[in-house]
Length: 289
Length: 284
Image 1 (tube, rainbow over the protein chains, first blue to last red):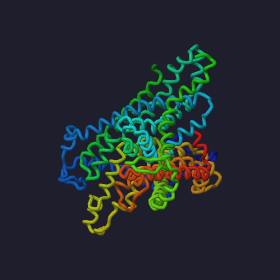
Image 2 (image 1 turned 60 degrees about the horizontal axis):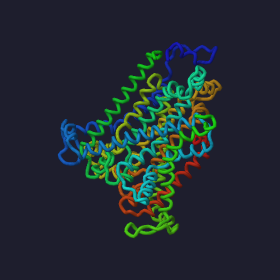
Image 3 (image 1 turned 120 degrees about the vertical axis):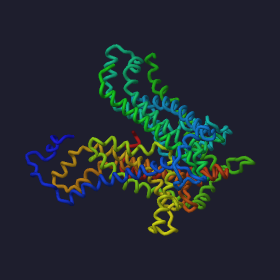
Image 4 (image 1 turned 90 degrees about the horizontal axis):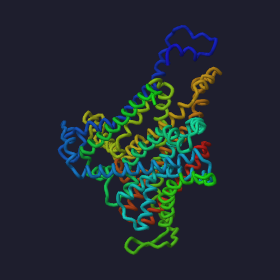
């Protein structure tokens, strides 16, 4: 927004009043919202800052609540500890598997809901919506009821089954929003130019909805790798990263937890940076095939 | 595919995912309902005895925890609106070219693990941590003053963890509002407050509705915050259900509680949707 367009906001025909500074009260009032928002952002980052600072702490006992001294040792130690790397690997395996399955199943439903008319649409919409409106604890409890009643052994497989279940709805909603937003005439044009249905899908529809699918997959991955509640019900003896964190936190939080939190945070920031960078690039060079 | 089978295509698309949801969402709910009506023990096995008595029994036994969860969830929803609305408003109307950066700042803290964020709050609120400890050393606070293990700690943890679920839908709703509508209101001699109350606020109600659901639902069933930041006096219904299931193996009792929580949440959503008049949200 530039200064040139600003005067257009005043009603037509009325000249803006001559340059005069607004009264002090009004100037202060106009500061209230930005200051409030700044404080709120500070509030949002406070625990993150604390987490990062205390990942460099060198506590004497198990309690990592007061500052004792600076060390890098925590960052070097975690890699040689199978009790930490094991759950981390488990969490990644579960998240990758659940993301793949949920993204494929959810995308198919998203396409069916936006592209076709069929009986049972309302029922399906409800089936998609209700899992998102259900507290996690209930999904966990009901899955445990199922597995116990049928004598199913609980391990990483049951965790993956559960994660796919709660991710499908989020994938459907994300992909559907993307499909609903694009112009159908592009597909019609492809058909007019002699493409068959499959070619149209592969060369036109899929590339157009791919950003939506990618966003859905990232969301599913983030939800899966961070899930504690449902996982705690269906994990049996296996341990994923959130379960490990919760377990050790009962005896006082060791600095390793902060180290891993900081590393996850950095990975997420790197992801976002790459995405912003690739978006910028695609905006700058839109026409190249 | 031959033309007469074309009607099958959408079903082929939705059957794999639909079956997954049926098998691992709908069926488990039914199994949980059936488990809640069984009697027996882990050693002797369970049998379906249609023991409806477990429901009133559980309500009687856990009413305080139920009521507390409901109370916390409502307070948290109100607090997230109170903090989130001015934020979303500022980003949407005053953000200018920094809108996306500000939105990113709102989401960024939530890329750390949920439990680790909550543990960081435990550190901040700790009795002799660097915040309260310093304030006590300077004599600003009484030595006996504490936040951790109080309802205040649990509610602030919940509010923190669910704030972005409020800010994002509010932002989406506010951003959609055509600023010319607000200008038209002021041209017609509405004060800025009137323009806000009569134009901006009503138009942003879908965001308030979506944000409240996204905050209230996870908050009422949460047990992480109370487990980490609370005490026995802040026990929420989620903790009760988890303990009965996983520690006590009291499956029928736990299933009955879970079922009642589910019914309560769906009932409240229904009433709320009616009150706000936003039932198109569920239709998508």
